[in-house]
Image (cartoon, rainbow, N blue to C red; front, side):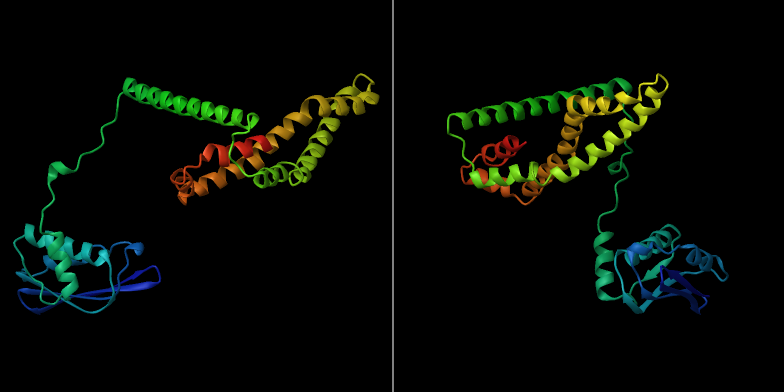
Length: 274
C-alpha cells in the first residue's frame, strides 16, 4: 500500500505495508516541513481498516532526510488514534531525536479545560473597553504635548540641550529638500483648479478671471494647505520613522540612561524645523 504525497515541490513519502498479518509497517521518507502543511492520516486509517485487523504498528524513518514539527505532529496523530483503538505501537524504528521529542510532547496530556474559546463581549462591554482605550490615549497625548511645550520653552531661555547642526539638518530636510515635491504638487493642483474653474466661468463669460482665481486661491488657501499636507506626509512621516527606528534599536533608552532628555534632543529640533 504505497503512497507518495507531493508537498510544494518536495515529496513526503509515506508507505504502508504488512510484514505479517497483525503488524502494519509505516515507512516514512523525504523532506518534512511545516511550511508545506501536514500530510493527511486518511491513508493510515484506510490501512487499519483492511483485513486482517491490525494489532501492532511499527515505523521505519531511515529515509527521512529533513524533518521538523510536521513529522512529530503526523506521528502524534497516529499514536493518538492507536491509543483510542487499543493498537500497540512500537517506536523502535524512530530515530532517537524523534522518539525523545515525542515522549516529551506526550509526557503531560492536554487538559481539556486549559483551552477556552474566546467569549464574545457584549456591546456595553466593548463600548466600555473602547472608552478606556480612548481615555488612556488622550492622557498620553496630553502628556506628550505638555512635555513638548515645556521642552520648547527651554529653547527661549537657553536651557534646551540639542545640537545646532542637527537643527540645521532638519531645516534643510523641511525646506530645500521638500521644495521640489511641494512645487510639483502645487503646480498640479493649480492646473486642476484652473481647468475646473475655466469650465464654470465660461458659462458666465468670465474666463478672464481664471488667472486671478488660481493666483488668489493658491496663494491664500490651497498653497498653504497643500504645503502643510505634503510636509506632514513627507517630512512628518520621515521624522516618525526615524524616531520609531531609534525606539526599536533602544537608542532612546540609551539617551535616558545618559541623562539626556529625548524630548529636548530629538523632538524639539524637529518641531523647530517644521
